[in-house]
Length: 334
Image (cartoon, rainbow, N blue to C red; front, side, top):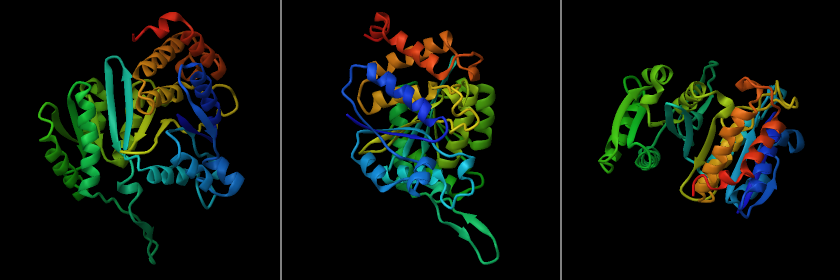
């Protein structure tokens, strides 16, 4: 398996190093290539997504990504985040899976990732008005909806589709297409919710959700809310998947420039993203569960400051590695 590693900016290289170290202990045949991306790439070659990086990602079986952005590039004519948007579009990873689990909460947000407001027409008119356009084609909605229903079948068979159909035409289209797709999944219960009420329910009663399906902008916001109620951004992972080609596996948190270089970064989200990579790119659900279990034990034994502990990034990683070497870890899912 060829894996493109994009450490990126801020704490990205630090949490990526933890993932690489853990991956090296696992019984998998992986060839890793580290590549420039984000602000680091802007500094080096003036482009957040250099042609060589994109070419290597397209030729890989999976992409592991650390973090992008930071105040160092706030005045840049090209922002690091443009590289992230470009990579998602080039790989057509339209389904972004963001799990949130903290008993009794156990949900997954399926966010459409390459359409909507972030990819619509934008610009500045002569009178100074700035605009961004939200657009969706029915086919874009259908394919991500099918992903959500298929995923729900492996869980508790419940999908909550989130929109703003009382105001937006795109949301009315979204609701219609999702309802049509649901007819092919009679074994999966579907309910619709407006995004504001869904956000409130996530905060007050998150254990009611199984699979949340929503468009790009709403998914961006709701996944951070879900992460907050399930332990914080430091523990939230994601997998961005398409129908063909490599997926992108990255933590939900940003580059956290305020703690970069201090050794206080929590690698949990990166390691959970590695687990998603093992599951979806390698087809090794067994190893994914073993890594998840090792991370859970490390959170108890060596919590980082964001989780109320004092462990450094390195100490947390060592705790994960120690757990992986225990015989019971390797037989946990056999």
